Image (cartoon, rainbow, N blue to C red; front, side):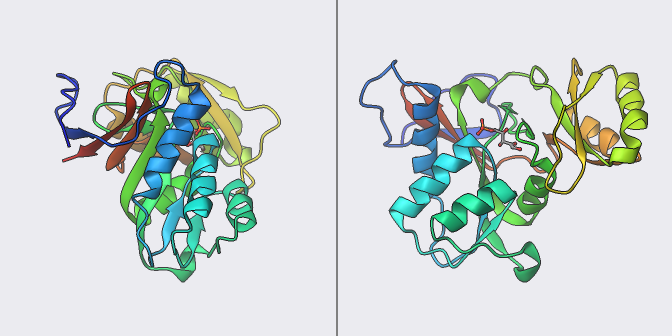
Length: 247
Ligand code: 5RP
């Protein structure tokens, strides 16, 4: 394995390349990059151990790759109805989180990830269940195409899951934090709640902001994954899949 020298923005991580290389460099679509990281993530799955599975298009590719690789996992804990349907369609048993005490690895995508491995998640609206499964897992493997890596979180609107009756109050509070909240139209989470997407937040200290927003009455979860960030990042680039670890 060879160091990538990712530069001064990567003080917390050790980086190494995987032997996953595109056959036609510089011409990969976003979906091809997602497929490549999804395939690489299969190598992190522990045979015989319960797997945690996130939600999104990158995770869909991961589930497909997992089915092809036939890694013998006894069962998966899923973070959404969407992933549950796909896992079951692939013949992978899905169990309730309450039936398990340990999840070795959790594989999920991100909308943004920064050099300290804090993320914005929830573009697909599954943030609460994702945060719960991630909290139980020993290792969080984030799979993302290269466009998701940012120096600073916040260009992607921050999703916040909210109890419906608190919607207006929470939106006023989010405005007081400097953001512009917008209700995600026509969307209900798997938990029966609404999503408020917050544009224009200044995210200087992701952990503090995560805690501050979670403290607003009526907020179920917000999409900052900073207190429990990723442990491993598999990033799809035109030069192949870059593996980096939080150390
Ligand atoms: C869903 C998520 C997803 O991980 C995130 O939106 C990335 O999705 P995709 O893999 O489709 O780009 O947090 O709630």
